[in-house]
Image 1 (cartoon, rainbow, N blue to C red):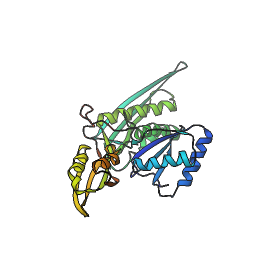
Image 2: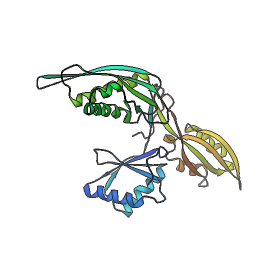
Image 3: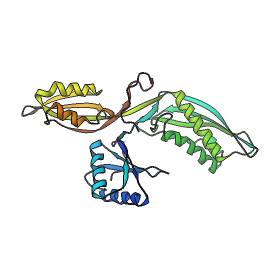
Image 4: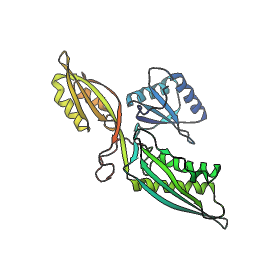
Length: 297
């Protein structure tokens, strides 16, 4: 099993039926570790779900087949999904006051947050500021937890936030005491509002594709790649009346490609795909102009 890697942009959720199946699944994944299949297993914290990540759906299909037939794991299998990301377009800052009334007591917490673009290849970063330290260790940890929950799952998307820095520019208890949960909630709501104000953009994984096909099918293969929002980079003679086409293609539009390629080439075509980079989904900052997100989890 590899370490978690952004080069494994396809996800597949598995739900073991019971505790015994969950333990059997963990043992089976351990046995598959270090084998020919390049995958990552990420348990969802607090849920009886294990999320497999791999380079493409064919690896996941092989994984599921082995888990069901060889190891006999009793589990429900979800649909493959793309590991999208989100980022921001600009800078923004916001202030939010969170009020909780409990058993006749009133608790009010104010948080001020600023966000700015950062390295797009890095997950969102929370800067330590003197304002955070002024809360004390326990409340500061709840503040970080609230902020981190937004970075792990961008507002309105089930995608982690990349390429931004978060700074707490102000934090103040407006009542004699505050609730730790109220601190986390104030931080979470404030950062969500701030991120939206900065302009949320969705990013998708782009795969580098190398297709081998008969020369006679060149036009059909290239047209199909372009119809999938792909970009042809080069076409080379591979000998024996065959050619090699290099292209880039959104991972979302690569699902089921092997079947289409076999149909176009009468079974003679083959391809290899590997992760290349992330880029903005066209129109993702304008929902009315965005293409459908294929198989997003």
